[in-house]
Length: 57
Image 1 (cartoon, rainbow, N blue to C red):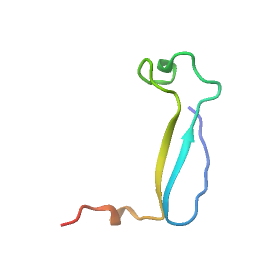
Image 2: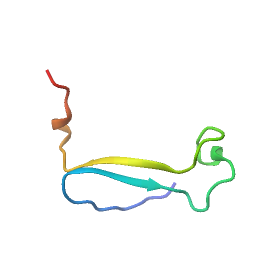
Image 3: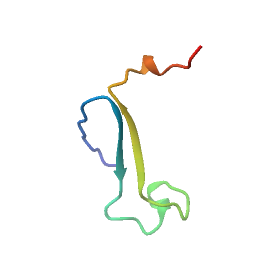
Image 4: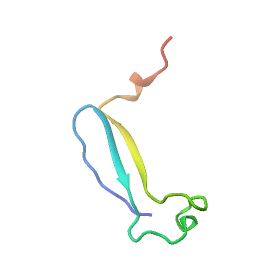
């Protein structure tokens, strides 16, 4: 497992593309199902407190 450090500022959605380097020959090497793509996107909400994400009454 690798650790990445990112800093984001402001309010909104941030998307980070995660791509292993070197790419594995078999996705199972990194814990993914067979024939899965090894690139994926991490989507974050920036500057939005969790308390504001509740369900509407």
